[in-house]
Length: 129
Image 1: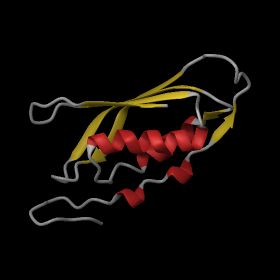
Image 2 (image 1 turned 90 degrees about the vertical axis):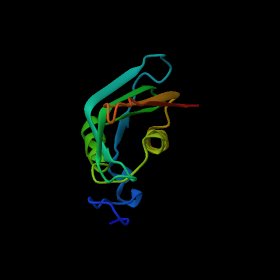
Image 3 (image 1 turned 135 degrees about the vertical axis):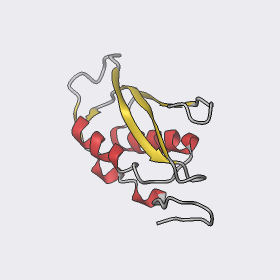
Image 4 (image 1 turned 180 degrees about the vertical axis):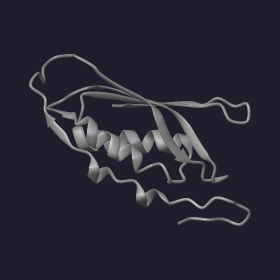
């Protein structure tokens, strides 16, 4: 648990993110350009500056290589972020790194669209390759 002076809410460090939960299944059409789009408005993690929760919409777009992400395992993986203190820009990049490492897509984009807080709206998009 990470806690700094003046913060009311304790949170976990990034070591609590659990990429080992991710599973895949064989993709039967590896030569096609078909895109898979996964979206959830249940994304949450914790701001490491304030300890307050961040909420938003996560969208994953990818062209599979030889395997696809198994959705239930993805949900478990995403839930591992709920108590983790991570900056928004770092969260998007960490998600992309873990997902690419697991399913080796031809292309992937991760977009985090955070809900408004303090009058500031943030959208972070990262791509592979």
